[in-house]
Amino acid sequence: MMNAASITCFVFNDAELQSPELIRKVRALAAKTIPEPRNGVDFVADCLRDLPEVQFVNSIGQYVDIDLSIFEPTDNQIDLGDAERISARMADWFEYICSPVPDHVTPYVLPHTKERFRVLATILIALHPIEVSEWRRFIPSNDNFVARCCESRALCERCRFA
Image 1 (cartoon, rainbow, N blue to C red):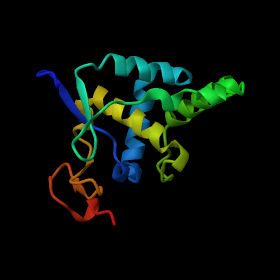
Image 2: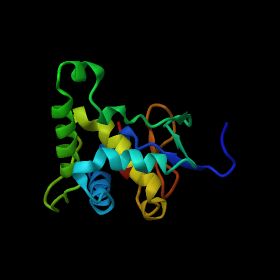
Image 3: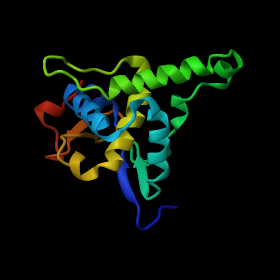
């Protein structure tokens, strides 16, 4: 049951993961927000813990929990002795995400990092609602990710995705 004082935050969706403009903004926000990128996993966990009033909503309006296990080694990786390598890979990923994107580069999210980026972006959005309110986010109007622009709340040429 939802708390009366809760705040709703839309999960960063597939349409947004395809937007170079939003990817650039998330990376800039990560660079500004995460003080020690090599400790990004701990930072994200601490932030999520400190946001108990935030209710996360998916593209079809269902409340969802944010799963941080994507930043941790799996049981199988631990059993194989790969936990340290996976943790180092996450630290490297956070350093990369917290680096600015040059203006001449079109940023994109690699397929195998989509869920990591989605979780990080969603938590950063929840942490900075005022700053993010100025972004042109794509809020899905149904479960097929037909996007509508947050500014106009209607479909516009910029927000259409086939």
